[in-house]
Amino acid sequence: MARMCGIVGYVGSQSALNVVVEGLARLEYRGYDSAGTAVAFDGKLSVTKRAGKLVNLRDALAGTQPPGGADDEAHGAHSGIGHTRWATHGPPNDRNAHPHVDCTGAVAVVHNGIIENFAALRLELERRGHELSSDTDTEAVAHLLEEEVAKGAGLADAMRKVCVRLEGAFTLVAIYSGEPDLVVGARRNSPLVVGVGDGENFLASDVAAFIAHTRDAIELGQDQIVELRPGGVTVTGFDGTPAEVKDYHVDWDVSAAEKGGHDYFMLKEIAEQPSAVADTLLGRIGADGRLSLDEMRLTDDELRDIDKIIIVACGTAYHAGMIAKYAIEHWTQLPCEIELASEFRYRDPILTRSTLVIAISQSGETMDTLMAVRHAREQRASVLGICNVNGSTIPRECDGVLYTHAGPEIAVASTKAFLTQLIAVYLIALYLAQVRGTKWGDEVFAMIQLLGTMPQKVEQVLETIEPVRELARSLAGERCVLFLGRHVGFPVALEGALKLKELAYMHAEGFAAGELKHGPIALIEEGLPVVVIVPSRARPILHDKIVSNIQEIRARGARTIVIAEDGDEAVAPYADTLIRVPAVPTLLQPLVATVPLQVFACELATAKGHDVDQPRNLAKSVTVE
Ligand code: M6R
Image 1 (cartoon, rainbow, N blue to C red):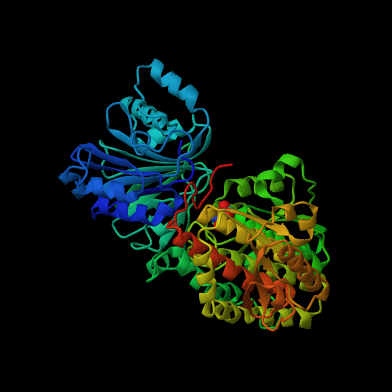
Image 2: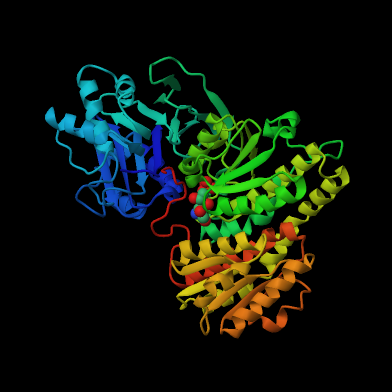
């Protein structure tokens, strides 16, 4: 099975192999266990696939890894498909790599998702004499298509007939040697977008794959089939009825999807944070000086009727949601819960028409979050998405959306998306406060002005980051790092620990500093690095408590690495290493305090020789529950 993968399809006048492989390179962040291509020419298909990263496939295609590489003519083919895989069931070997072909080798298919009834389909196919050579669910589709084509159907009709038999979530893209000018795609609960070119057209999991060729795209809806020919694109439902298509123009270009002189996408994305924050704030103040979030699509009356907010998200986005709870409750006095999206629908959450569910997702494709959105909507709650990818599934299924403007985030570890998610939740909280009258207009305006200074504060952190890099390199031999915080510093601590786990593969834990004495303090031993996020002095009650916590852990031998605002001298005597960040209001502190932790994890992982853009076992878009 292949569940979170990158898919590319092309038809046009260029070399399909070149276009497809370059597209896969831009999608490799979605999975990098194996990769493969299939192109159609001269009445046959040429299929090449390799376990491991894309470089192995490139070598095979260049003929440096015979046998099994593409023959020379294949490089002249004008239609093709490709796949980069994140394996779940079935080891990531050459055999399980996509594309998969039927018995005759005339049909090739790539797939993202899970075909839940594949075991029954496989049995059925084997009884009819088909020989399946991989462990995947995908291969069954190739054989089902083969049967339909043998009965006389064209590839598109065959796909329609097969799709209605499939259960589960899938994006499928196929080619057939008998129709070399056609690529067919199908979509149910898994991403697929069309790129519209001049005499050429593209299909991909993400616009990044074709952004070098066109910025004109079409969103595909649920249960739709797309036929791609050099001269046009046709979209129908699984039942063949023509579908209305929604086209859009991508507002970033190919340079945004490249490393721009940095060694890693992650470094580039960390550096882009000041502009990502600024872009997400852009145009939010109306002519009357009031905050305006037009794109949100929820009316002020609807927002006034809300009596509870529940935020759902995963991973880093969940940490943004935790911070949102503090801001929302403080500014709007509305009760706000935060819940892991993967847990949400299994606990019978109490949702009414007056509940606002906020779903936060960079990709807009995270299956756990999508399922939480669907559950909330079924229960009649209003759902507002915070998302970074225009046209992705979650914002399309929400009642309203606030887009972050971070630009494409390619590195698996989320950085600039996180900061912009924070901006989005601050904006929503302030907007609710304005609409519901829990803050005066001038108070909202003053906070917006403060938010406006954040790009420069984040820049300031980046300009003074070198000591953090040195510190990270010096800790490359450690086995464990703890992170402590209070109030909004607690989710920041969790985020610092998550970054270190996913990039440096180290044991890292984040704790609420007050909880330490209830157990985790037993972990402290001589020399253990403990990173402490110190709250702003504007809340002395929080600040003083954490100064005590630092003393407690230091007395037990911890090596204290303290992140504190400029001018905070009270912590200095207890800090083995002191990292300064600009002084900002308490609720906004995560915007500056998280950045050193991102750099810390990135540098430490690099010092250990890890590929920070593609950490082991992970993929960027988690399109499986
Ligand atoms: O695309 P999403 O924001 O929905 O993704 C959620 C998480 O998978 C994501 O934040 C993940 O935790 C990051 N890799 C962490 O850096």
